[in-house]
Image 1 (tube, rainbow, N blue to C red):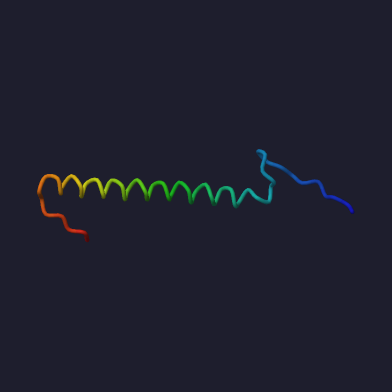
Image 2 (spheres, helix red, strand yellow; image 1 turned 30 degrees about the vertical axis):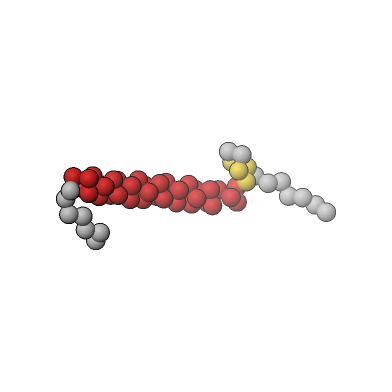
Length: 57
């Protein structure tokens, strides 16, 4: 059996680099969406605590 040397960049095999960056970008987008939804939910809670009408649209 012969083994081909595998090229590494920053401790990741070179062939995994696109997957790594795709996962990193997707993770950042997911965190941004969670922050936005959390801020929206907190604004609804503040409105409800003040006694204002809350619409879930």
